Length: 71
Image 1: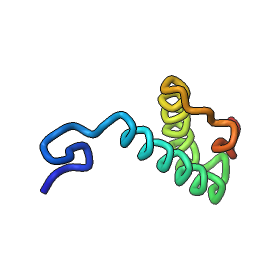
Image 2 (image 1 turned 30 degrees about the vertical axis):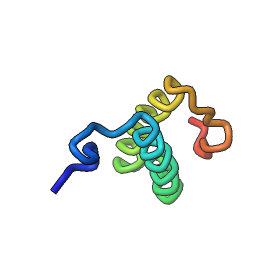
Image 3 (image 1 turned 60 degrees about the horizontal axis):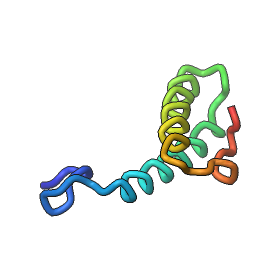
Image 4 (image 1 turned 90 degrees about the vertical axis):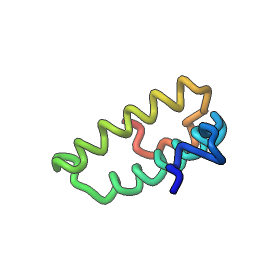
């Protein structure tokens, strides 16, 4: 079985990686909205949120519409 990072023996394209990152960023924010900001879970999700925000911004993705947490 191939991993999510492989497609017919090739690595995932940059476009596919960005699509997955945008989806993860959006899904993560949904989860964050359901947690208390002082919880351990929220703090761990926030660390991933920041990582994804840096990756997407560096890739030229405009997060104005996507970023509902805005932290």
